[in-house]
Length: 49
Length: 576
Image (cartoon, rainbow over the protein chains, first blue to last red):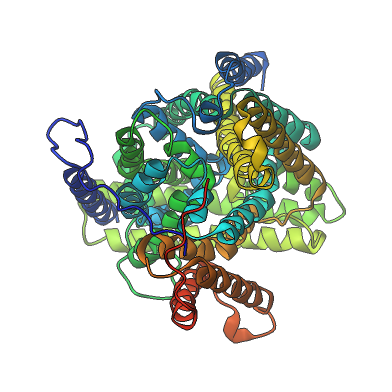
């Protein structure tokens, strides 16, 4: 084994997106968006079935 | 297509390619040539990632998928946002921190040279094989319906993409992809609006959606655990996560799109842009297909949508059979229109008692039409066992040519070609870069310090891969189902490559020798599974499982081998 991978920085820099102080907030937002999209798709299917 | 369509098509396609080549003609720094400009912002990166993934087949086949099977295919993308979060949090920061040009260069730093060469070799083999298919797939469809010569279509689009990809490298690819995606979004939204306007008076979007839903075309999410179903929430989440992690995290054609840029932030936001938009975008394209289905319920619909293939056989000795099928389909089609209108009328009046029977009658009529379509496909096969019976890829292009006004037809053909060029450019760029960095520079280490020579070699190798792809597309005979061919090629290699990277990122005690031999054995196993699938019934599994099996076997065997090998930690890191 030559080397171990460097640790990924956890709070290396501010995302620079209004309302988000760190990347974890962005990831959480994307995950919640995904959940909302799946829920909306399920509702869409139900509404037009 | 008339003169206006040709003008729109040529001005947009040649204009974008010329702009990309001209704007980046002075790209002579290796960093800029391989990673793109160091001022690239997240929007350009995000669009570039999207354009590389969205090939022409996305815009030809996926509406056909919505037309034929409904919008359930959208679940295939459910693992994508989760995979992109993992790539952003783990893969991308490490790639940037090490300053690598390719993902396989990271394997060299983390493990050893042989593992790096194995990763690069598997990528080149897989992408090299797929390169011909991705240029052939849209060309065969466009050439068939537009009457163009297939060889000239392949050569024309191939040369166009080679010119600007070789001239400006990664920067030109990102720049042109931005404009190409603008054409794609503009064209698809225009087609959607025209489609809504062409629906029967008074029907509107809601009415069309209710019909599509009643016909089973709008089942977007399936929560069932039925293993026989290809697309469910669960296959999308787990299978899609694996596929997307392999594709976005380890495939150089994607890695190259986001490792450049002004800062780590730009790559991350570009990927998050895709995580937010990809599912809605695929939903929109599938919905377009489902609405085209509704459109053809009220319009004269062909019994078989690849009309060129149909006419080729209908004019032969068995023509009377084909004409009888056309007539039968037309009669059923007209009868079912009445049933649909009756159902809509009952529904609008809120007649709950009579509505279920009307719906059942409408569905029975639709099933009768589908049965005739199957008969038509059987008749084609009887006339010619080599006839192409998959017609869903021709539904949307047929709609464009028959129903859209001139000018918009040119714009939509430009959408298809823009998508083909965008994905092809990303692919060639990655093949050229990997060959230069992981092979040529490795075997000629003294030349690594001559930047100008490196750029020249990268340009030559990119062009070589372009010509290989054109030659492959011209001379290879491809199976009818091209998408499946690409997916099978990918699935055979992706799992093992992902396994190597997962070991690299998460199993810090495993060394290069263990993972190298584990990958060799795992890849051999996958080849054996694929080759023996028809001889041993128990091995005849869906090719999507190869991703999971290859990855899991590679990781597990790496761990096992590491326990049997002497501890070889403590070696100095290799030089890039």
